[in-house]
Length: 292
Image 1 (cartoon, rainbow, N blue to C red):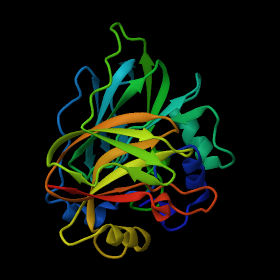
Image 2 (cartoon, rainbow, N blue to C red; image 1 turned 90 degrees about the vertical axis):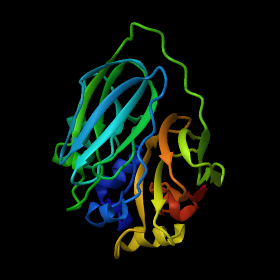
Image 3 (tube, rainbow, N blue to C red; image 1 turned 135 degrees about the vertical axis):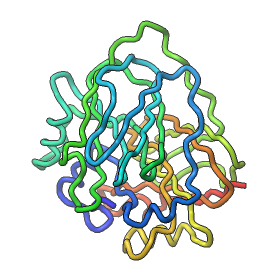
Image 4 (cartoon, helix red, strand yellow; image 1 turned 30 degrees about the horizontal axis):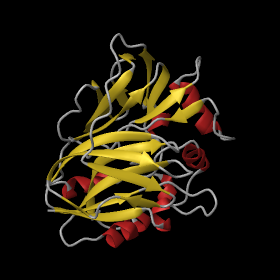
């Protein structure tokens, strides 16, 4: 996990201030928990599909995409874990500029704004996130800092791309099977879901940036086990990460799909609260959902 679970470094405090998603599950033992980790389900009708390959430590993907409803499919070639935070940049700025600003400290750059993206899957698995992208200048970055506590964007895991005007009308948002409403500090969604393919609509109704990281719990493990492990990192993780949506700003929304097997799942937000310095899940932003 990134350093916020053990005390945020200055760089990661700044990263959180601009809405970067927080710590993820280390790969050293997570792979052992992934025997039955669900994969992503299908595609969203009408969306442009952009495949991003994540490896240690780089993103591979297109440098120009059309505006409109866009699905980012994150294929994690590992062996580490990765996510793909979309950053909207002012003209003339690059992902390297953003990484340098975060590394240098000081206030978060006003010329960079979070815009969602696919959250962490396990190595060898995929995750996805879908949202409407306006024309402009963007970058993908990875803030995960395993295995040596150095955020991956400082190792070059930054990918610039440009969104250009589309030649066709923007496709409408998909119809979700379930809505996840992110608040300060709670997830609002049903506590039971049917097994199978789901399209989740993720909405940030809070005043702070929020993320949703979805975990599939190991048999016999609970949300409290995951919370305790997130702080101690002792022993194998009690859950496997299976995606979600990285940082969304207040009022932002996005979608992700997943095919869920029967079992217990937990949603976490790992962001730190500026006022209390506590992580959002310690303020109540975690929830168990049973799939049957």
